[in-house]
Amino acid sequence: MDDNLIRFLDRGVCGVPDKLRDAMEYSVSAGGKRVRPVVLLSAGVAVGGDERDLLPFACAIEYVHTYSLIHDDLPAMDDDDFRRGKPSSHKVFGEATAILAGDALLTEAFRVMGESTLAEKDPGRALAAVGVLARAAGAEGMVGGQQLDLLAEGMQADPLVKEEIDIRKTSALLTAAARMGGILGGGVDAQVADLAGYGRALGLLFQVKDDILDETGSFEEMGKGVAKDRVRGKMTYPGVFGMDAAMARAEALGGEALAALSSFGEEADALRDIVRLVAARRS
Image 1: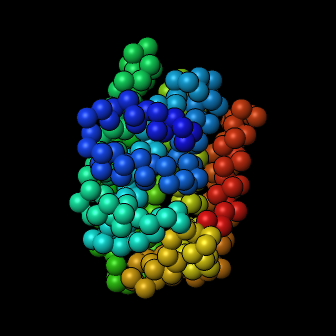
Image 2: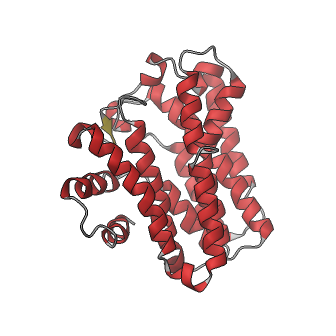
Protein backbone atom coordinates (compact mmCIF):
# COMPACT_ATOMS: atom_id res chain seq x y z
CA MET A 1 0.00 0.00 0.00
CA ASP A 2 2.73 2.49 0.95
CA ASP A 3 4.49 2.24 -2.42
CA ASN A 4 1.21 2.81 -4.25
CA LEU A 5 0.39 5.84 -2.11
CA ILE A 6 3.58 7.52 -3.32
CA ARG A 7 3.25 6.19 -6.88
CA PHE A 8 -0.20 7.67 -7.47
CA LEU A 9 0.86 10.90 -5.80
CA ASP A 10 3.97 11.26 -7.94
CA ARG A 11 1.90 11.18 -11.12
CA GLY A 12 0.42 14.55 -10.27
CA VAL A 13 3.28 16.48 -8.68
CA CYS A 14 5.31 17.60 -11.70
CA GLY A 15 6.22 21.24 -11.18
CA VAL A 16 5.15 21.22 -7.53
CA PRO A 17 7.49 23.26 -5.29
CA ASP A 18 9.95 20.97 -3.56
CA LYS A 19 8.95 22.00 -0.04
CA LEU A 20 5.29 21.32 -0.72
CA ARG A 21 6.04 17.93 -2.31
CA ASP A 22 8.28 17.02 0.62
CA ALA A 23 5.56 17.95 3.11
CA MET A 24 2.96 15.90 1.27
CA GLU A 25 5.16 12.83 1.02
CA TYR A 26 6.37 13.21 4.62
CA SER A 27 2.86 12.87 6.01
CA VAL A 28 1.71 10.18 3.56
CA SER A 29 4.84 8.12 4.34
CA ALA A 30 4.63 8.54 8.11
CA GLY A 31 3.10 5.09 8.56
CA GLY A 32 -0.14 4.27 10.31
CA LYS A 33 -2.58 1.39 10.22
CA ARG A 34 -4.05 2.21 6.77
CA VAL A 35 -7.42 1.04 8.07
CA ARG A 36 -9.51 3.08 5.64
CA PRO A 37 -7.86 1.92 2.40
CA VAL A 38 -7.74 -1.67 3.64
CA VAL A 39 -11.46 -1.52 4.46
CA LEU A 40 -12.21 -0.17 0.99
CA LEU A 41 -10.14 -2.87 -0.72
CA SER A 42 -11.54 -5.64 1.46
CA ALA A 43 -15.13 -4.51 0.96
CA GLY A 44 -14.65 -4.32 -2.80
CA VAL A 45 -13.11 -7.78 -2.99
CA ALA A 46 -15.91 -9.17 -0.78
CA VAL A 47 -18.46 -8.30 -3.48
CA GLY A 48 -16.31 -9.58 -6.34
CA GLY A 49 -14.33 -6.48 -7.31
CA ASP A 50 -10.85 -6.40 -8.83
CA GLU A 51 -8.26 -5.00 -6.42
CA ARG A 52 -6.46 -3.29 -9.30
CA ASP A 53 -9.57 -1.21 -10.04
CA LEU A 54 -10.06 -0.42 -6.35
CA LEU A 55 -6.50 0.65 -5.57
CA PRO A 56 -6.65 4.29 -6.76
CA PHE A 57 -9.75 4.87 -4.64
CA ALA A 58 -8.09 3.23 -1.63
CA CYS A 59 -5.13 5.58 -2.01
CA ALA A 60 -7.49 8.53 -2.42
CA ILE A 61 -9.26 7.87 0.87
CA GLU A 62 -5.91 7.64 2.65
CA TYR A 63 -4.91 11.02 1.17
CA VAL A 64 -8.11 12.49 2.57
CA HIS A 65 -7.44 10.92 5.96
CA THR A 66 -3.83 12.17 5.95
CA TYR A 67 -4.93 15.71 5.09
CA SER A 68 -7.31 15.62 8.04
CA LEU A 69 -4.50 14.55 10.39
CA ILE A 70 -2.22 17.34 9.18
CA HIS A 71 -4.94 19.90 9.85
CA ASP A 72 -6.02 18.30 13.15
CA ASP A 73 -2.48 18.62 14.49
CA LEU A 74 -2.29 22.37 13.83
CA PRO A 75 -2.15 24.73 16.84
CA ALA A 76 -5.57 26.12 15.91
CA MET A 77 -7.09 22.62 16.09
CA ASP A 78 -5.79 19.85 18.38
CA ASP A 79 -2.28 21.31 18.71
CA ASP A 80 -0.29 18.06 18.58
CA ASP A 81 3.47 18.16 18.08
CA PHE A 82 3.75 14.46 17.18
CA ARG A 83 1.90 12.10 14.88
CA ARG A 84 2.73 8.39 14.53
CA GLY A 85 5.87 8.90 16.60
CA LYS A 86 7.26 11.62 14.32
CA PRO A 87 7.08 15.42 14.54
CA SER A 88 3.83 16.72 13.08
CA SER A 89 3.96 18.29 9.63
CA HIS A 90 3.70 21.84 10.95
CA LYS A 91 6.64 21.25 13.31
CA VAL A 92 8.82 20.17 10.38
CA PHE A 93 7.65 22.43 7.55
CA GLY A 94 5.88 25.31 9.30
CA GLU A 95 2.17 25.94 9.71
CA ALA A 96 1.61 27.56 6.32
CA THR A 97 3.19 24.73 4.33
CA ALA A 98 1.40 22.13 6.47
CA ILE A 99 -1.94 23.73 5.64
CA LEU A 100 -1.06 23.77 1.95
CA ALA A 101 0.10 20.14 2.06
CA GLY A 102 -3.23 19.14 3.57
CA ASP A 103 -5.11 21.15 0.94
CA ALA A 104 -3.05 19.53 -1.82
CA LEU A 105 -3.62 15.98 -0.57
CA LEU A 106 -7.36 16.55 -0.39
CA THR A 107 -7.36 17.80 -3.97
CA GLU A 108 -5.03 15.07 -5.24
CA ALA A 109 -7.45 12.46 -3.89
CA PHE A 110 -10.08 13.54 -6.38
CA ARG A 111 -7.56 13.73 -9.22
CA VAL A 112 -6.46 10.15 -8.57
CA MET A 113 -10.06 8.91 -8.59
CA GLY A 114 -10.93 10.89 -11.70
CA GLU A 115 -7.93 9.54 -13.61
CA SER A 116 -8.45 5.94 -12.53
CA THR A 117 -8.97 3.10 -14.99
CA LEU A 118 -12.35 2.35 -13.42
CA ALA A 119 -13.49 5.93 -14.08
CA GLU A 120 -12.96 5.18 -17.78
CA LYS A 121 -14.49 1.70 -17.74
CA ASP A 122 -17.47 2.41 -15.46
CA PRO A 123 -17.89 6.15 -14.87
CA GLY A 124 -21.23 5.61 -13.12
CA ARG A 125 -19.71 3.53 -10.33
CA ALA A 126 -16.68 5.81 -10.05
CA LEU A 127 -18.83 8.94 -9.85
CA ALA A 128 -21.03 7.39 -7.18
CA ALA A 129 -17.95 6.56 -5.09
CA VAL A 130 -16.56 10.07 -5.51
CA GLY A 131 -19.84 11.48 -4.26
CA VAL A 132 -19.78 9.21 -1.21
CA LEU A 133 -16.27 10.35 -0.30
CA ALA A 134 -17.01 14.03 -0.86
CA ARG A 135 -20.05 13.91 1.41
CA ALA A 136 -18.26 11.93 4.13
CA ALA A 137 -15.23 14.23 4.13
CA GLY A 138 -17.08 17.54 3.90
CA ALA A 139 -19.24 19.79 6.00
CA GLU A 140 -21.85 17.10 6.70
CA GLY A 141 -19.19 14.60 7.70
CA MET A 142 -15.60 14.84 8.87
CA VAL A 143 -15.15 18.61 8.62
CA GLY A 144 -18.46 19.21 10.35
CA GLY A 145 -17.44 16.74 13.05
CA GLN A 146 -14.21 18.62 13.65
CA GLN A 147 -16.18 21.84 14.04
CA LEU A 148 -18.53 20.18 16.55
CA ASP A 149 -15.50 18.84 18.42
CA LEU A 150 -14.05 22.33 18.71
CA LEU A 151 -17.36 23.78 19.85
CA ALA A 152 -17.74 21.06 22.48
CA GLU A 153 -14.47 21.85 24.27
CA GLY A 154 -15.28 22.71 27.85
CA MET A 155 -18.97 21.88 27.46
CA GLN A 156 -20.81 19.80 30.01
CA ALA A 157 -20.68 16.13 29.03
CA ASP A 158 -23.55 15.26 26.70
CA PRO A 159 -23.89 11.71 25.33
CA LEU A 160 -25.86 12.85 22.28
CA VAL A 161 -23.29 15.48 21.34
CA LYS A 162 -20.46 13.00 21.84
CA GLU A 163 -22.15 10.44 19.58
CA GLU A 164 -22.76 13.05 16.87
CA ILE A 165 -19.12 14.15 16.95
CA ASP A 166 -17.89 10.57 16.64
CA ILE A 167 -20.29 9.69 13.82
CA ARG A 168 -19.15 12.66 11.79
CA LYS A 169 -15.49 13.03 12.69
CA THR A 170 -14.39 9.38 12.65
CA SER A 171 -17.16 7.03 11.58
CA ALA A 172 -18.16 8.93 8.43
CA LEU A 173 -14.90 8.23 6.60
CA LEU A 174 -14.81 4.56 7.58
CA THR A 175 -18.44 4.19 6.55
CA ALA A 176 -17.49 5.79 3.23
CA ALA A 177 -14.57 3.39 2.79
CA ALA A 178 -16.82 0.34 3.18
CA ARG A 179 -19.62 1.82 1.07
CA MET A 180 -17.22 2.86 -1.69
CA GLY A 181 -15.70 -0.61 -1.79
CA GLY A 182 -19.16 -2.12 -2.17
CA ILE A 183 -20.10 0.28 -4.96
CA LEU A 184 -16.81 0.03 -6.83
CA GLY A 185 -16.73 -3.74 -6.54
CA GLY A 186 -20.15 -4.04 -8.12
CA GLY A 187 -22.14 -5.02 -5.04
CA VAL A 188 -25.94 -4.97 -5.05
CA ASP A 189 -27.80 -2.42 -2.93
CA ALA A 190 -28.31 -4.81 0.01
CA GLN A 191 -24.61 -5.65 0.12
CA VAL A 192 -23.60 -1.99 -0.01
CA ALA A 193 -26.04 -1.20 2.82
CA ASP A 194 -24.62 -4.02 4.97
CA LEU A 195 -21.08 -2.82 4.30
CA ALA A 196 -22.05 0.73 5.26
CA GLY A 197 -23.48 -0.58 8.54
CA TYR A 198 -20.23 -2.40 9.14
CA GLY A 199 -18.21 0.75 8.46
CA ARG A 200 -20.36 2.85 10.80
CA ALA A 201 -19.91 0.44 13.71
CA LEU A 202 -16.20 0.01 12.96
CA GLY A 203 -15.72 3.78 12.90
CA LEU A 204 -17.41 4.23 16.26
CA LEU A 205 -15.38 1.36 17.68
CA PHE A 206 -12.20 3.01 16.42
CA GLN A 207 -13.07 6.27 18.17
CA VAL A 208 -14.09 4.64 21.46
CA LYS A 209 -10.80 2.72 21.47
CA ASP A 210 -8.93 5.94 20.68
CA ASP A 211 -10.59 7.64 23.65
CA ILE A 212 -9.72 4.71 25.92
CA LEU A 213 -6.11 4.66 24.74
CA ASP A 214 -5.79 8.41 25.26
CA GLU A 215 -6.37 7.65 28.95
CA THR A 216 -4.49 4.35 29.28
CA GLY A 217 -1.83 4.36 26.55
CA SER A 218 1.67 5.78 26.43
CA PHE A 219 3.49 8.02 23.97
CA GLU A 220 5.56 5.02 22.86
CA GLU A 221 2.40 3.09 21.99
CA MET A 222 0.34 5.91 20.52
CA GLY A 223 3.08 7.87 18.76
CA LYS A 224 1.57 11.12 20.03
CA GLY A 225 0.77 12.86 23.28
CA VAL A 226 -1.74 11.15 25.58
CA ALA A 227 -4.32 12.50 28.04
CA LYS A 228 -4.45 15.72 26.02
CA ASP A 229 -8.17 15.44 25.32
CA ARG A 230 -8.98 15.49 29.02
CA VAL A 231 -6.65 18.45 29.61
CA ARG A 232 -8.32 20.41 26.80
CA GLY A 233 -11.80 19.66 28.09
CA LYS A 234 -12.77 17.52 25.10
CA MET A 235 -15.57 15.01 25.37
CA THR A 236 -14.23 11.48 25.45
CA TYR A 237 -16.13 8.24 25.91
CA PRO A 238 -14.52 7.47 29.29
CA GLY A 239 -15.10 11.06 30.32
CA VAL A 240 -18.79 11.01 29.40
CA PHE A 241 -19.71 7.45 30.40
CA GLY A 242 -16.82 6.15 32.54
CA MET A 243 -14.09 3.64 31.65
CA ASP A 244 -16.17 0.52 32.36
CA ALA A 245 -18.96 1.75 30.08
CA ALA A 246 -16.41 2.68 27.42
CA MET A 247 -14.97 -0.83 27.45
CA ALA A 248 -18.45 -2.34 27.23
CA ARG A 249 -19.38 -0.03 24.38
CA ALA A 250 -16.27 -1.04 22.45
CA GLU A 251 -17.18 -4.71 22.83
CA ALA A 252 -20.75 -4.07 21.71
CA LEU A 253 -19.63 -2.10 18.66
CA GLY A 254 -17.27 -4.90 17.65
CA GLY A 255 -20.21 -7.29 17.78
CA GLU A 256 -22.34 -4.88 15.78
CA ALA A 257 -19.69 -4.60 13.06
CA LEU A 258 -19.39 -8.38 12.80
CA ALA A 259 -23.17 -8.81 12.76
CA ALA A 260 -23.42 -6.43 9.80
CA LEU A 261 -21.40 -8.97 7.81
CA SER A 262 -23.71 -11.89 8.56
CA SER A 263 -24.95 -12.01 4.96
CA PHE A 264 -21.37 -12.57 3.73
CA GLY A 265 -19.34 -15.75 3.80
CA GLU A 266 -15.59 -16.22 3.96
CA GLU A 267 -15.14 -13.57 1.27
CA ALA A 268 -15.56 -11.00 4.07
CA ASP A 269 -13.09 -12.59 6.49
CA ALA A 270 -10.59 -9.78 5.92
CA LEU A 271 -13.23 -7.30 7.11
CA ARG A 272 -13.86 -9.44 10.19
CA ASP A 273 -10.13 -9.51 10.93
CA ILE A 274 -10.06 -5.70 10.83
CA VAL A 275 -12.71 -5.55 13.57
CA ARG A 276 -10.63 -7.80 15.80
CA LEU A 277 -7.47 -5.80 15.14
CA VAL A 278 -9.18 -2.48 15.96
CA ALA A 279 -10.73 -3.94 19.11
CA ALA A 280 -7.33 -5.19 20.31
CA ARG A 281 -5.21 -2.24 19.23
CA ARG A 282 -2.80 -0.51 21.58
CA SER A 283 -1.79 2.30 19.24
